[in-house]
Length: 265
Image (tube, rainbow, N blue to C red; front, side):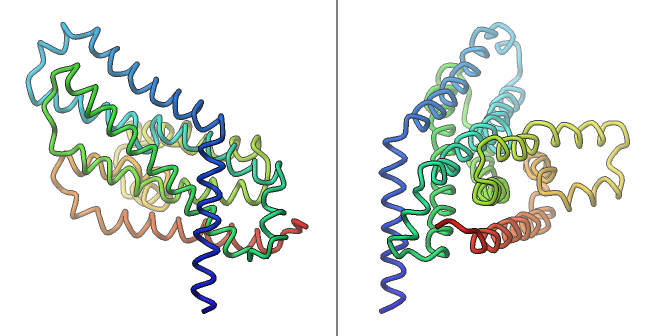
């Protein structure tokens, strides 16, 4: 009975978050800008059609995958996910929503994990929006054929975002500040991946760099797409998957412990 009641409360909170989500102007603004950004990328390539027409079919596939890679995971989707989740989650503290939920008898465990689940649902919506726009608009406009890697890249992108979303959720529920959350999370998707790319170019793929890349989840993002292209995905899948899972569990655990110790009454 207690478990049934717990699940009922959990899904009640999810339903309340959906209600708040679809009534939030920031949801339509951020995801509208994200959609416009994807469409702009598609039509920018369409303007360069004369160049695209001179490419071989294999190169067209490379361009198609490149657009998916730029939009998904730690590309545009990562940026927009960090921005929206920072505003959405910190807004719960600004509007005293968290205090209201606790005062209504919801446990902090239920509140925290319902909010985390909602964060992943929002991220999945972003992945779906990206795939729909590129598949429905990009491929017809640019005359691309479907590449075998598209769905794999989409599924991988959501998996790669697991630790990122968990880290944003941890920061938002710990700092309660949009500015601090954005300032801490945006470098993960904007600055740090570029730093590791430069290091790889300058130093080469040494064992030291490889282990640093494996340890830091933000740098693992570059592993699987390359592995997919080279057909060596099974070799890296277990290693990368374990790293993502461990980082995600760490951020969730730390965030939960810090949240339970906060005074929110």
